[in-house]
Amino acid sequence: MVNTPGTPIAAITPTAPADLRRTARRDRAVRAAVEQGVLGAEAPIAALLDVDGIRESAAALRAAFDGVVAPGTPVLHAFAVKACPLVPVVRLLRDCGIGAEVASAGEAAVAGAAGVAVGQTVLDAPAKTVAELREALALGVAVNVDNTQELARLDALVPAADRRSPLGVRVNPQVGGGAIEALSTATATSKFGVALRDEGARAWLVEAYARRPWLTRLHVHSGSQGMPLALIARGVAEVYGLAEEINERAGRRQVDTLDIGGGLPVNFASDATAPTYEQYARVLAETVPGLFDGRYGLVTEFGRSLLAKHGTVLARVEYAKRAGGRAVALTHAGVQVAARTVYAPGAWPLRIAAYDAKGRPKSGPEVVQDVAGPACFAGDLLAEGRTMPLLEQGDYAAALDTGAYYFAHHYAYNSLPRPGIYGFTTNADPGSDPGSGTEGVRFAVVRTPQTVAEIVAESGAEHAAGITELTAG
Ligand SMILES: *Cc1c(COP(=O)(O)O)cnc(C)c1O
Image (cartoon, rainbow, N blue to C red):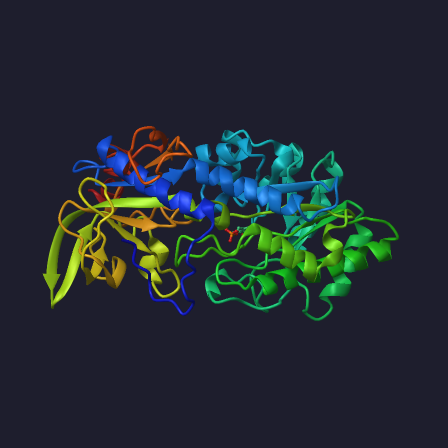
């Protein structure tokens, strides 16, 4: 039913019970979405979030680190709000004991609206204004400074603040990039942080900490999708080494917390969760043995790995046609919900699952086809030349693993509306056949679908005559 995009890495067959259960929940939810009218002829696109799956990932993250840190080590897992900036999602994660990593005033407000406590919030924006820094200090939010000029700004602000904010500097360990250039934050010339291997940078950092006893953290985020675990761990090792040096020079444990960022890659090629948080924690423990011995508190900032596999975009096939011998399904999901995949299909292939008009997994002969979106440019394709069961008019195409950086990141091309997002639970009876009925599947609104009236209002309707009047006689 699910095709697999061409990828140099062999698709990992999912065998973990949690992965198999998630797949079964998805199938039941798709059918229930059609039966309950979440999706249909008049609601031709919707996004689903698997609430139980998100809870499981949050629990897996906490368990993985609980399994390696010395008892009593303070650990804050801060969800990178960027990955899925939806208030109910951040609230759900808060309910699972996860805080928030924010990088703009908007993300900070989303975290606040979700009820994330100030002490569980970390501000990492690369281009913070003076006003944003002042507010963060006033609130007591943890701040990681990006560069020398920002540190100079803090020098001016900190004496006036009452210093509840834990403060640190972001370091670029320059250990190298991964498979996706745009998401590699530890290259020699990355725009993030203080470049550790640049001439004089290390000595400057040690001195900067020696002169500022209020700097108590170090931050590193070595990258993201496409980065090998070993390389991410080497970035953490570099920053750990720097913390040891700073503390030795200070003669005390000045740096008491290491923020090791996020960036665990997600497997988009199958339903298997790989790598797991447990595997990553083990790699960290092997690469940086001192990291977990209790001398340092820890902050993590995972985004994609907490959400990606729990999101599905469902789009009705409005028309199915043929062109130049190729089958083409015209669906309602394209660039507006999958900008990365549409503009960079090589780096961001998505699996597409085929469901019939009743929301049941489609089988049957596999056909090479394009799965197209509704936008008016030729490249608006969710998948090109995929071999999968033929999508026909009235069927549904499901874009899998889209819980992070996809439907929550609307791109307003063609004034296409933001689709509705719905969380679901399946109330699965563990003893029953998980592939069976849809009874017990319940939906809750995460974000209402954008209306045409809202699009018009957001498109400057109240200023309709403004520029005409500028030049009118
Ligand atoms: C984007 C980002 C993250 C989260 O990255 P993921 O790949 O989604 O886990 C964490 N920390 C910082 C500073 C980021 O910019």
